[in-house]
Length: 219
Length: 97
Image (tube, rainbow over all chains, first blue to last red; front, side, top):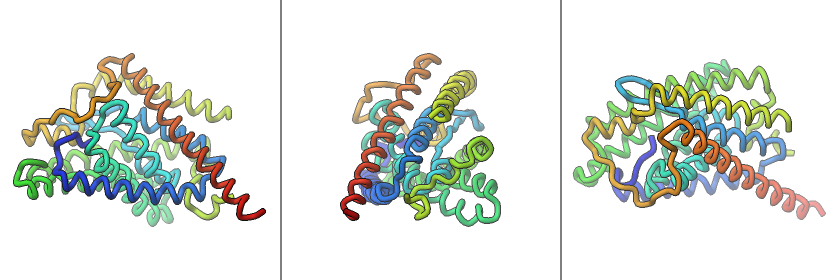
């Protein structure tokens, strides 16, 4: 879902940078106040793990592939503020070091995959996990991919309409295609995220209580 | 620290195995957005910035790229959190002399 250079209208690109930078600054302030020693190696290893996992695309349907986004996994394990930072760092390295996603579109990619991906999964996980943690993980993971894709489709549509077709993709194509493919990719995300969550809950249950931003984690 | 070393080794082994399946089944296909662009007849523009590395077109190149990228990601997140932790300690010690 990495947007390349030149796909979106300059207005959308600027809006993406604005949302990304403001949200990242807010998350850094939040995490700086709460970070403690026990979470540091876990958060760094999780970030590295999500980076390599994102390189492994799995086949979906009709010659399409998807890969783990990791926004829900990071959000469930670290809380939304730290998760947004982790996914943003991954996206920045993918862009600057490996050329994955356009440099001008980096703000939009951070907005869609880090900010929207993490916040949407948090909004789903929090209420549902009170009844069933595993159902919360499953639904949060699927939602993170689907909502991020829906926002990307909206950006494509708005870019097309605002620029008179010079940028973006017409909504009658971008919305059904993006939502259709990512509804399926979201199932892969849900399965992988749930498997990692269940594995961690069995072998290292303390890692499920490392969220940054909750008052009880402050030492 | 031992458990973290195990976690890193576990990730490296899973990545090495996962890449085999990636090159067997999906390396030639685009992701959801690339497929949407392809089906809409959108040509990708050239990038405004050329990155120093690529993910690699074969198994070993991708393996090395993943290890480099994962290492850089680990280093940046770890370094940032260490600095944030030290600043937090300094701020707290200034508040309670």
